[in-house]
Image 1 (cartoon, rainbow, N blue to C red):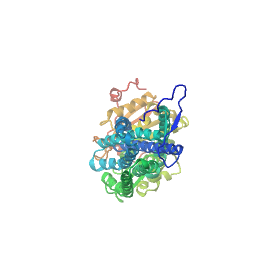
Image 2: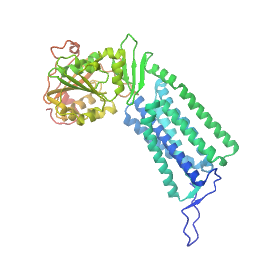
Image 3: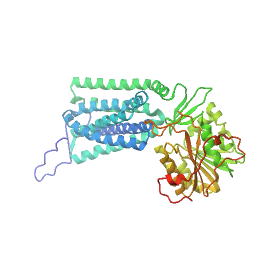
Image 4: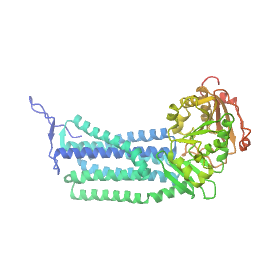
Length: 528
């Protein structure tokens, strides 16, 4: 920090601000504005790097809460280290700030590609996530003392006023960066290209501020060196941007195999469809296997058919944008209307237009009885009509995934119970009872707490090698069965509709159980 000005003589009030001759090419007012603009841009870029690490860490490793906690805590700690380290650079604040921004642009801009490459080809992402969080945090922390010195050189003012101006610009920049990441960078450029573009903006802003506004603070050799460093950083980022498509294709082949047919980043998730033209397809959502064409019929029959054994004129499907649960619903005579509530419109469009996926779901979305609503299932249920549906099918992401937690909460099940018509039935995929029993029985307990009588059951026949655990960074056991819970206001019967032509569900092991209450670790009282 710059030492405060000398106190005024007795009886003379000290001036609030005193201009300092910084040999700037512009007026002090304009120079101060440009420094604050630089603070704004650098803060926006810094927050984008932070959010990028959180998003990519959650995608590659899983458990978004843990990854966000790791990134945020490590970065805040590292910012303190960076602030202390920058004290040695204050005597050459302009040159130090220029080098810090160039290095931050390179490290932050390339962090997403490096993290993705480490996961795909090195099999490790956690160590890289911590390393980049630490490095970026140190560089961001070094910005503040250097910028404080620079802004005081333009117009010396009391320390409190300088801090207020600096942090006001910093916080507003963080707001813009935080909003730009999900609403601009991700939809338009994707994670990798978005990070590279942010790095380029960071390098240009930092380099321009020092090389133009504070160029007289640098020696001729220093200006040339800083210019060379910034040009090199921009060239590296530009080269990475040119190669990013080839990099993504190679990475996808390494992760998903050579038969990647569709790979798109929607507003909600990454959607990848793989499989040879004449062979079974696989659908991955955010890197997790959602549909395997080799055994999906067992899963969807087990999910849908027990719930359809009764009145089923009006059916609600929550999720199920691939159309496969819908296919099973439409097999049953007597279905008059099916409402499908799916958040991601791109998945539904893929299920309509992709020839292989449309053939697998038998063009279910073209049926005139089907109405699709693109909305969050939780929010949609809050405004849905009461007692409207004979059957509700919950074909939502695995309950072991952190982002799906609210879709397996007692409140969610209570909202679903409201839309069930008298005698209605509600079927939920609850994960594997053998490999993740706590999650399975917690789902059952939550449904009972919402006032539903439950019948937990499982269906075997799952093929080995086609499971994706909620934590992609750990070796998850491959379950050999799917677990489900069938529920209603009164205890529903478990069985197949005798008129159903598809009997492969009976090949699995169907059981209901008294052990459900015994193994449930959530105290919700006796079952209804």
